[in-house]
Image (tube, rainbow, N blue to C red; front, side):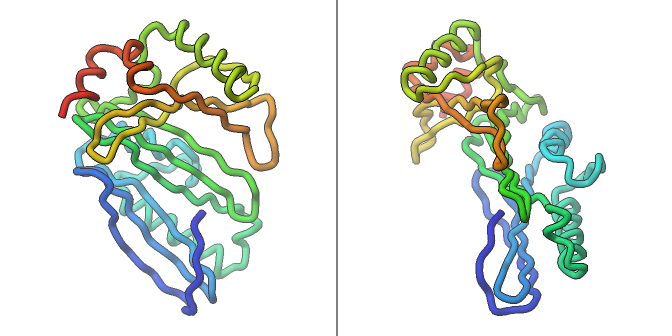
Length: 229
């Protein structure tokens, strides 16, 4: 949740920040008194309906209702938030604020995260996605081969580098690290300790691999697209 001061009762701001060629984060704000609340929604210009529906499923903010456009979902967030503020029930409702980050959008491959934080609660959580825009599908751990060996390496790295003993079962949470020029530098694999939940959520642990270390575990078709300029 992003908040910032502004001496206006209600202000509605709309802006588009482009992070990549055809993927954007739509932003809108609602301000009351000296406090502003930022709302976000991911916009993919191509007709990736499966991908967008998957992203909407990250957190069920609207009781199973799906929207066919990010503009409609962003407006629904704004209307809901306005109503909660006007009825002074924002804290009781624990409205969920989503924040999007785009790590990679290259050759039809999209790596994003969706972070949520509940208002009035310390609970927060982040989900990471890797999509194939050309096929309108989620890649997830299909990015990797020799997964059993990679999981074993991750387990050892967690113990030696982080002193963490976390049960790891899959490789579907990760963020791809790139240089300013768009070159793949490495991959951060993310693991949550679901047995040690706290009031703020599940402890997050990560294992970092340089591209040189991880490329032998990347499926050839995706390795080519990731390294191609």
